[in-house]
Length: 282
Figure 1 (cartoon, rainbow, N blue to C red):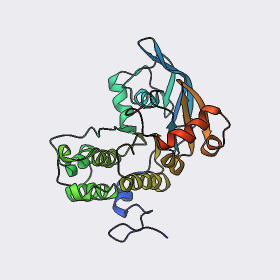
Figure 2 (cartoon, one colour):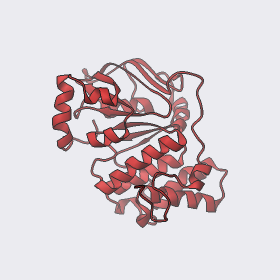
Figure 3 (spheres, one colour):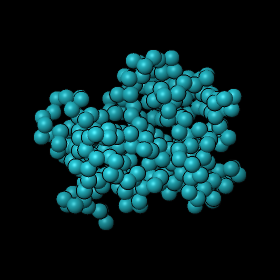
Figure 4 (cartoon, rainbow, N blue to C red):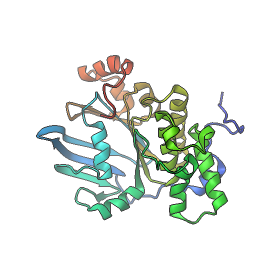
């Protein structure tokens, strides 16, 4: 049975004003939208990622899995240009980003946005104003359209009861939900999620999972999700990157990961799915 939102719309359908206002991600000429090729990075002489390669096709969801401290969140920060790799190549929409300066990375961040664990919201702005900020910055919309889209995004992530609240008054889970709404308002091609379900109650986790699926199905959004939650990954992943001791121990379809005979993967599937993360991120 199809679930419905409070206004009676089916939960698997995005609201009309949202699909009208948010353009589908632009097409690339050829190849994957994101690719890592033999990427290496070390901190203080300790390797974090070693010879890691993977690709993400447009409109697909990649879930990055692995134990704490294996470089999952580092992978996202490399994509955003917050960290620089020691060697290897990283392409976003066929553009090499490893040598870009901050101005060049600002252009990339218009296409690729990240939802941080702490939300990274503007402390002095209400929830509604935080979500509306990217819409106002982009321009081209009337104020009533901006507020309507912001309110619907907030509703879709389950934070419609705190629209006038400031971030300081929100729980960690609520902050992350609002951060996802704000990220979507920026109309990126790719959304990076860093542990979206950590410290989030099951109802919000379900809403966020449904939202990621609907954005992929109806608008062609590409997602990379770092998660410890195997059940969440099973719902979302088209492909899986499993990092073990800094290396890509598996990259391929979800089903192949689940049925893999690799002992490290089997230990992760049987143990880590039932354990809380040892530390935030990865």
